[in-house]
Image (tube, rainbow, N blue to C red; front, side, top):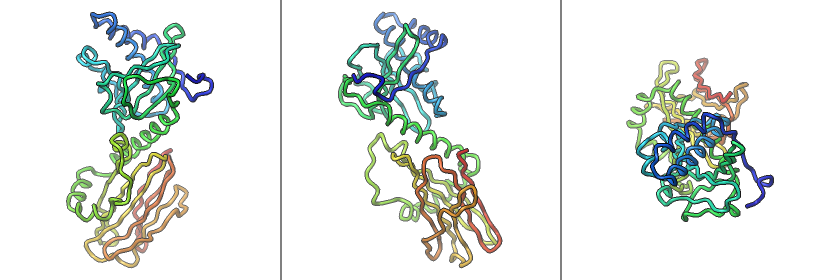
Length: 306
């Protein structure tokens, strides 16, 4: 394997609590090999969970394999459930090992595989590499990519988690679902990008669009404000904003995308008989405002990453 000093890695200090939990789970096993397997799997998951916490990425240990007694007994799995992303497999290796074993039972339903070197004596774990897909039960560490792509994936998950929280706070889920149901056929034509490249199974969970809609009223006329945000693996967001009406869009209705300092990023360029819309590419973590204005009445939605 390439010397760790030349690779992008991350070192995690293993605490007494980590070892205590790993020993607790391993003691459930009657077979010594299985006991060691569970011990190392638990430490690998806890190490990756620590890394996610450092990045402020939300995880769910209770929904991971180590949180379920029967799965710990029956499976050789070391997955970590990451909200909005899916299961990230955390495979342990010992210092000086050249191969990481990945059982066939975890070849599917995973968004990626992190190789974690467990050094019990030094009480540390090192995240040494990451791959998205696997088709063999042995990973050669000398050929293993570093964790650079893992960083991108987790940061994308972090921002999508944030968007979910923003929508949950300011957008009514029932109202949004009703609007989507009523407008489904029309929305499919307008919002789905037919020229988008096909996504792999791994990509779909993290790059699937977030769609929300709500009713707003300006000068006595009701409109539908809809927002679709699609994360990309390049670390950006594709934003599509649309304002619709059952009547003709009035000439004095304007749609703008603003920075938090009220600088115009984009104004509506697409205008149909019953809708106006705009599209914009956002950088990862870029805050913005959506402003719908009619005469002197203004409706604003703010998305702040601060």
